[in-house]
Length: 174
Image (cartoon, rainbow, N blue to C red; front, top):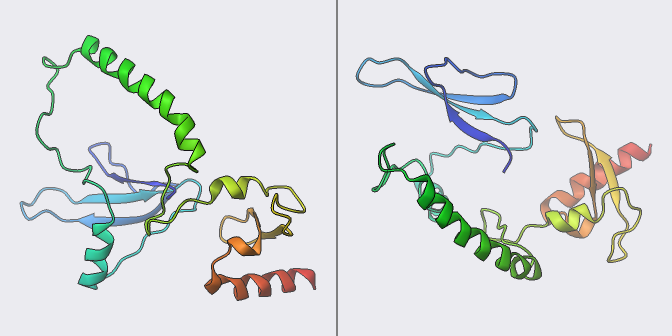
């Protein structure tokens, strides 16, 4: 995903130059309306809404713990120890460094929301090339709201999009 969600705060932040959509929340206690703004400078992110309870349950079941929950064990300024943090980070950094080789060897840790592996590394391998490492012809089109070039091979395009892509390529050749 590209972009991030941010609540408008006391700073009065609203839908700015990179804000794509804002959801207004009106509290029952009469306090001021808060906006949840989807801010996406690269314009690659999407927001999907659904009132289908089953669809929502299925999607929520694929997500990790809710980062908005405060949970237990929040530290106050007095409880926070920089020395303890540094010690914890040393161990974490060493473990992360050792694991990086394993992560790369297994194709990375990224997963799409449907659980499939990411394809970004392969996509980087076709940028600016005529033929991909697998020998397939690389296509380039400029399409979409961002007006940027998209480099790809047809085997990486989902079945439902292939006909649309073929039409775009044919129109560009005319």
